[in-house]
Image 1 (tube, rainbow, N blue to C red):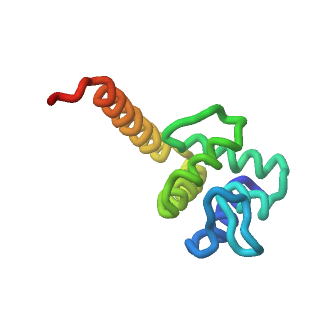
Image 2: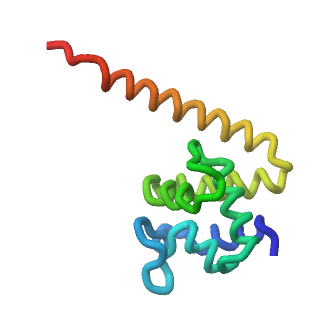
Amino acid sequence: MTPVEVLERAHALIEDPRHWCQHAGQIGDSKRCATAAIWTVAGHSEVACAARLALTEYLPFSNGPFSWGTVVWYNDHHKHFQVMRLFRLTIASAKAGGKAARAQARRIRQQVIAMRKSAETAAREPAHV
């Protein structure tokens, strides 16, 4: 099984929002977070690690490529459609050679950084009374 096949199968497991969860790896037999969906498909194998690493490439931030925490954090702090978009973007990029999706991911990352800087600047400015 390839990392793309792992991502496609994991995506299928949680594509229905009723089968996806946040703040828990797995609830019962049918609800999973993104990481648990990958583990369900491929176990704690090298191919599962490669699939997770592929997802981290398209996150708008990164805590380092060797941390499950980045995918877990994204899953727990974003909406279902955003997590599904991350899977689709990664899968499409892998199938297309990656250049277009990487460019889109860079644009998203730059937008997120700009929004954070703007929020930090606004938080430091004194309130006008």
